[in-house]
Image (cartoon, rainbow, N blue to C red; front, top):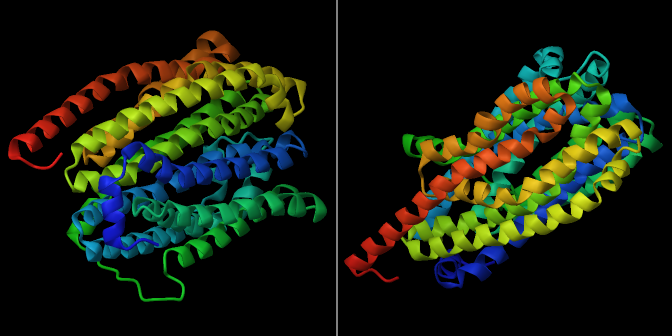
Length: 453
């Protein structure tokens, strides 16, 4: 492992394109493995019956847990990257321990609250009367793992922002691989069905948590350097709030989508669940690429190397847009076969194929949407980053999913995300131009001051 000074030199002087790719590979692998093990749940549980669609309904709960984990992880990680860019290792270490402890504590609190309100929670997530018992059964087991999931997301993001994404990948991948192995064992061999899927997920989450403790140097056990003060709390909120908004509104949008899909029957809910998992493969690459960009941006922002930030920002937009064009074209062609792989049910295939193809057509817009949101967040523009974070799923998607199905019925539901993406991209492009102009101004100021560019 590099020393902090060696890491800083690498982040500030290596070619940005190569550096972003190097940072992105572990995060992309982590995101893909996570998406694949979510797909494993869909595949194995899909062998049971339509009632097992409860697993898809609970996807929105996991999005909430991820949102809070990302709040602590991105909030602390951005601050840590800046401090490391400035050469302040001690402040970075204090932030890491404090945020990890807070994340674990918050997970325990939410788990207890979930158990106290398990049926109302299941109904809120979008469980229909037919799905209620299976959803409650799945959630009751899943709640055990919430503290471990939340802390794992926090520690993984901290490692990534420190430039040690490979170690975070090991932690997250170990649990994901275990989940894929345990799913068929618990579901079929032990005959535990939906409860087995939840137990496999929780077991893998606990293993990921333990491995991440090792990767982050917290095992062998050491006393956390827990320092709760105004600087640390404000930094977590400043840099983490956009992630919290982005992930939380995504959870709300999933809930709205589940409720809207429920009006067309359980097969449509199943189709939505399957399509979300397939689309997540492409989105995982783009998000992983952006997460590779973030630590490099944080280091260079701390060192005021705005010229490098601009170069990597444009590179990330181009690369992610090109990837999504290729990915979308392939998935569009094989959409029926992909849906059938997970649920070989004519009704599910019929509903899922157009839903998947609509999203393939506009998927390439994810590049500019995600990268602009991430750079604004990294630059510390909390209000703007928070607004951009909720624009896609909150400002556009949620109103559309309430309106379009009423006007165009099932077709309206199927086109909702694509319409939201077009509107979001057009809106985001305004701030893409403003961000580039802002970077140009900062670069010019540095040149006028005689600072090295």
